[in-house]
Length: 292
View 1 (cartoon, one colour):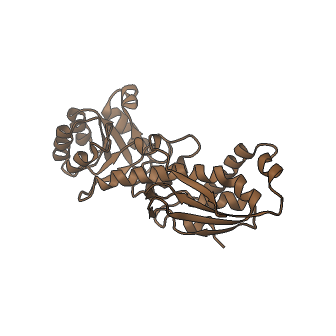
View 2: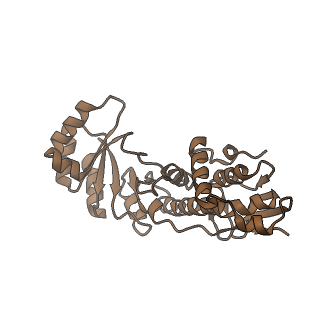
View 3: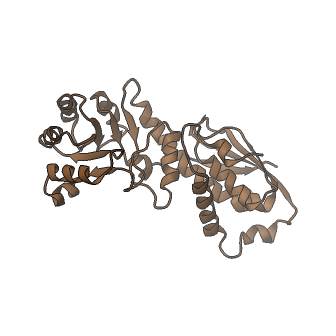
């Protein structure tokens, strides 16, 4: 029997709890109080159906575990045959899943399954495009917290399916001192000193800087693990790499686009973070066709 876990990208973790909660929430939203009244009214209860989930464009697939969980939630009698796993590169017209069993369940789960696969495959495909532009460099492309409310775990998983890496998941798993923190704290040095005094030895500290002068100030303290170089042009990023000399990890952020990513990677920074991976990924064109 196909399980959601068997379709996960092998190098990207997604909790079964996150899958189950997201699927239940989406089905509750779509089925409402009375269920799929169109299918109930027009399709006999015992009618069977066979359908194929088809990629209508080339790209990287993600979200299949959620599609499978959607159909399984609606009927344990559905048979689902996967033709690939998350993270696979597919061609336009390629069959991704075959679903057979009670027709009402197939039709009731269609839109929810497609929404998951379309959204997450769009993120994975866009991420893979960014990653291609960094080939030959050591730089890793990361997502941010600019995610759809309630879907962060899924969208960050999709970034991993596309070959990207995850930044922090939330405000509770790493310290990132932004410009507003610095302003309220009274400067770079007091912000870093208070952060170090507050945290345990396993927690990383990252701080955002806007200028090379601020970077020098951070380097002089020796208190930061990572420095976020915010909205710096290519020449300034290159100078920042030289100035840091490997003493801290450097992350470029702001203005990271498909047009700029290759030049940013060539500066020698360690990471680049792009909110566009999740907040601006176009939907991946995928369809469910009844195989008569």
